Length: 364
Image (cartoon, rainbow, N blue to C red; front, side, top):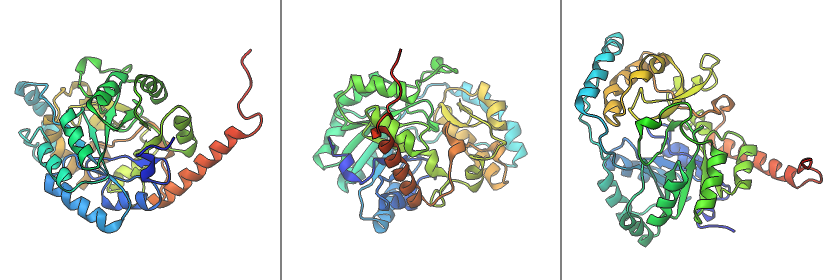
């Protein structure tokens, strides 16, 4: 049955909010115009910066769109741990002829100010990452007609989101690029076995909650969208697939790296931000990942100057190259055209499932 979420766009395709410049008004407008649901990433922006992007997006499209917020984060590490990492990164700063960043940046990402703006001048959808808002916050958005989505990485997080009054959850499998949206950052959970794959997680969440589910993590083709829809999702969210589009604000080096044979795989790392995030394995990740503390957002601020200097120098080996496990399938298509291609692939996959004999052989 249609939900309020699927009524917002023609196709069950959500463009993931990619903080750090990847998803701005131009990309969101192109996706919305093609019948998908475009998102702005408010993470790392000031409240006014978020508002200005909303104004710009509204000038580019009259279609519904979403805005993603980061939840305020508790400090997980004392200053001495961060200072030890600062010493380890001294060589990086010297190499790129820059200074390491000031770690005393805000830990709340301007959360309350952004909430106030979004309640005063409502947008169609607001989603949350790194935690679940209080029932009072979610109720306040319901009162102004905003649909709310909470990113989850476990069935328990999905249940907490449902209990708090979220309209839907975005189920993020471990395959997803960028930061894992866990509600609690547990350093003891780090390792190759951390996190569930999307289909396994989707099954667990579908049995745990009754609210609509958006599936995210490694999705790059319409046939994969068909798979998660068949598994119970109402929509599919894609980030890396849109990262390579010309409308994406990602650095050209980042876009090129997605399909560059030099970068063979992705891993989860704390090296760049202090929180687990999936990216293409490069020199910086290999050298500093094993020693990076669980100290978000202090590490994010610490490495910001080095990452910017590396990008300016044209050196992808010192940048955070966020990417999902499906990065090799990235296509350099305009965002609107990519939505059209994905939709055609989705339709073809659905048609194949309805053909006689297409359901496969029976088990013996």
